[in-house]
Length: 260
Image (cartoon, rainbow, N blue to C red; front, side, top):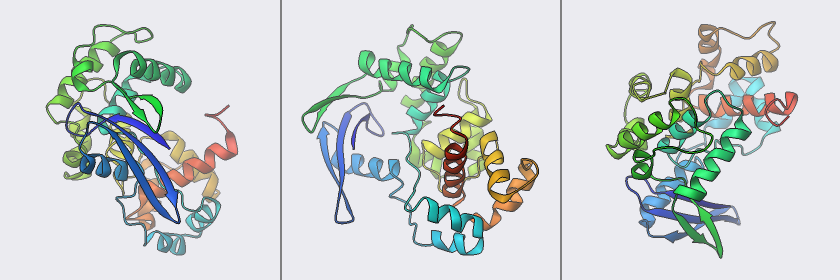
């Protein structure tokens, strides 16, 4: 796996080549960022900073989770490279299809972002906060997206999207903080905290696909309300993020609604 990203807390570009040997995850670092910063970031990206040894106990308490774990052995969340990049994705992707958003984000990396050679190949990173703070226009970004991204870059420069900062707060406070960002609502705030900061035990109640997945997995007549979902998910603690991922993977396999 080859990755390129702006390292946490600054503008330096990092490239990483990750591989597994004998059950051990090894990463070779390229670029100018500090190795220890990059190591911590990669651990968060791959959810290797979370102790998963008690996750099997959730499957013992809840047979549905047990079946999902058997269906997807070893599955862990893979996060965005940073909460900042997750927030940018949330803004870019508003009211357009995922494939369209992915193309725009990739072109922004190629045209505006730094590049780094990783294991013999050139990789492009998404532009850092200072580049986004200076953004005037970009093809495919319409409405107020450029304004939102420009302001997002400024907020990131001030540390408002630092992963450790967000994870140090109670979940409710972190979500409120994120919803103060330009162009970020409840759904996007959950996305940033879950898949940007790598929150381990957050239930994304604003994600409609999760409720549908729960209805399918548990044989319910209709998707549960947010309150019903909160009650049902109590047995998933402290891995509600991980169980939510398993349920979403199951829903996609059964419906192919994203891939299709």
